[in-house]
Length: 338
Image 1 (tube, rainbow, N blue to C red):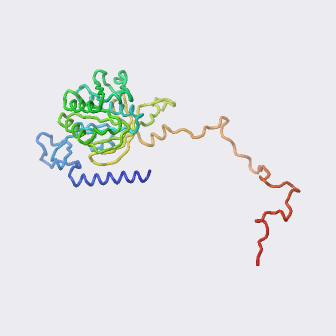
Image 2: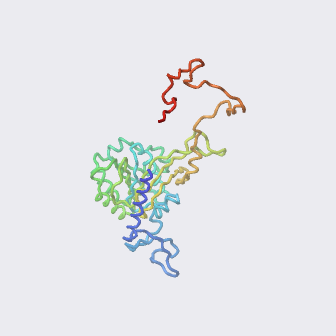
Image 3: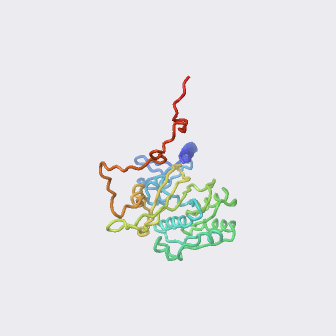
């Protein structure tokens, strides 16, 4: 486990060094006094300057999750006009991956126009993972059922075609493409087409991958997601024992523009429609349980001082049963010398 962590940090360090050499690493710059880098951007606006393309990007180009540490590691958040990968470590994590994707859609609809969202998948993935519960869309994410459209394709090639055509449409708030495993057709060329059309339309495309291994794609961000245990519900009197609180997700950055590693646990607040980061100490205190149940009669008092209980030694002969000198064990006999 330690070697895996060291290898991962080494890979991120190499990626960051390569990004610096190629000039693709985003850098925060402050415009000089009395000058502006772009006539269309106010002077007091926080800018992100990408050296290679000489492009100026405003903070509005990123979808901020609300978790400061995660947004900082992603250099502002998830890019809105791009392809973003969300990996589920196992097939049984499909519900958590779908919940996280719907949380991101809720943030998009909260910040911008409430346009419909298209969810594309194959018959296999919908048969295995199912569809979101319509009544839960509004209560948990503030999404009306008629805003979420589904396209079920019989084959992967059909799902890719639908996703590519939908990615260029500005009448959609976002496009979700859900794929299982590592199909050969979902190669670098296919993801480049999705990423290019998302950039042209200015809309995000979320690629949900269930039980898939990381592989080269055109997506600038890859998040590896797994469900986290829910904490107890908060009440006025404190945490309610035995209750189930807000949904939580464990997020690991597998790929990003800044090549910064990190792992975060986020809770989704359905009332505020926002994420909140759960700190490790809070998670430990809320989910900790005693290893051994306490005695019903209270603590067991220590024995009184001086009380000694004698037990016969195991295997010791009784009185009168001692072996004769000739029957003693060899290791008990005196050692011969000379």
